[in-house]
Image (cartoon, rainbow over all chains, first blue to last red; front, side, top):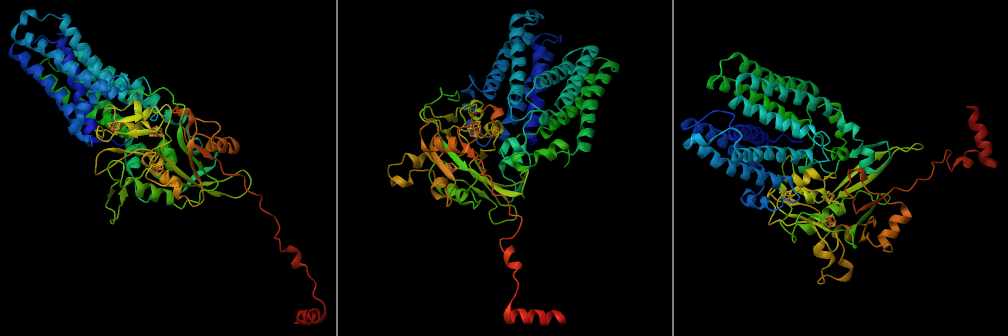
Length: 300
Length: 245
Ligand code: SF4
Ligand code: SF4
Ligand code: SF4
């Protein structure tokens, strides 16, 4: 699948944003007064920046409000509702933390509800991808696990004490390893082939293409990433996304500096992971173009 | 609404004969010609006279080389357009309700006024049948020429999809695949018509008719008996004479 920058930035930023917001809603970070306003402000900024970035890849963003109508069937629509609910439910929690610190207790019901909406938002985002049978690498429980683990790690780096944040980073690293290991070869195992796509038997290969330059379908859904390139990026995603921030959170004295220093590599690693999430995902339509076999072999 | 309607009795669709399709691309041109001027945004072309021309089409014709177990390789031309699936995943993923399946005849359409151009429906389609128009930013797909097949302003014989009407070899057929007695259903039954990638769970309505088995290639030339002719008379004398040299 085409790794569109707007979607990569959207999923990374809104993941960290809603992760942090959820942690604040739960009262896991003891902030009050002005500090609470700054912390909640940052969480809102990250989450909303992500949501705004997601509208950049729309052909007609001026109609984006219509995306709220089909929540019964569409995960994309549900994501819209869940994100609005999370932002709205977190507002009273933020205001209470800032102006009535006494009211803010960990495990407070409004906070729990707001945090639940944050988790739901991440889950809906991941289900947009996990629901697609056409992309076997995504159509698996590791997709929501991966998205939730990244949101938790990002939120923990910003909100939680060093060792806990380090553990969350390592969990996101484990989720990555699991998704890589279980995802490799799923496209081939899923059993689709040029033979099944065309119904023309086992020895079928493209002779003349239907168009002389790539069309929307090819540009959007057939993407090649070299195996060597992918391996290097996986190491970067694991090292910067999970390893380095875990180390920094453990050795640096707890505080703003540790969080900021750990967040930078974590976000870089998350960007690398998300780029791979798209670039390595093969779509079954590739079988019509005889390109899926190349993609599965990892040549480019 | 992007909830799928209950299965309709009438299931309009295409039956494509891979035996007779010659890959002339006439259906591609007719489809673009018709759908450029009526239903929804025109099908734009980008850089049409440049080095990387690219445009929106609702129908594409591939050519494949197929090697049977015995005999030489064959070229099979393979038109690909929306199959108007009964369990259309492109419809249920749509966040806006722009994608829908008609309850009365099963045609899958896009209401372009509601489409935000998110592209999710194209990702959900296994067959690459949807293309986002680069100029209008809305999703385009085969309409089954809904503005022809019911159009009383057209002469009766033109109330068929443009691609079907234009095909010079009669490789494309249009009809109700929900009615087992319809001409298309009988054609599918007679010729062993099949669905594409049924394991994807989309339950396509369109069917493909497989290429008929080809005659076995004759080992010897039909002219073989002539090669053995013995020349007689004057020609025979000349033949013998020339052999001396
Ligand atoms: S062929 Fe693709 S676009 Fe057409 S109904 Fe089926 S899934 Fe949808
Ligand atoms: S591109 Fe348009 S029709 Fe397709 S899912 Fe998005 S809003 Fe619906
Ligand atoms: S039925 Fe109409 S819209 Fe569909 S492929 Fe044929 S000509 Fe194009």
